[in-house]
Image (cartoon, one colour):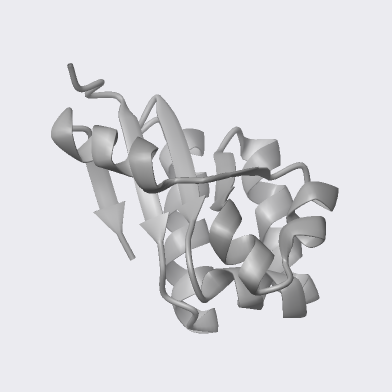
Amino acid sequence: MADSEHLYMLWTNGNRVTAEKMVFMYAINSLIKGWWGKVTLIIWGDPARLVRDEPDIREKIKEAIEAGVHVTACKACADQLGATEVFEALDVEVKYWGEPLTELLKNGETLLSV
């Protein structure tokens, strides 16, 4: 059964402006302003490269975690893009997301894809 207060954000777009002006802005403000009770940010694909290469994006991840956002990343993507150690240093959960994402979709959870 879906949790109507839990927002899952699937971040697959490697664009820096999208990261700063949508992904992090919305994820952080969703908790600060009480729009959602819980936010999980799933990093999948090209954003792993962005996190690996851009210190300011890593700072945004730290801000999100401090605000209470649960940040997690696709292990396959992180491994293939050389970002696993960077994620681990940021205390980002790294796991295989194929099956969990399928379950979220089958359960009708609230999922925002960016």
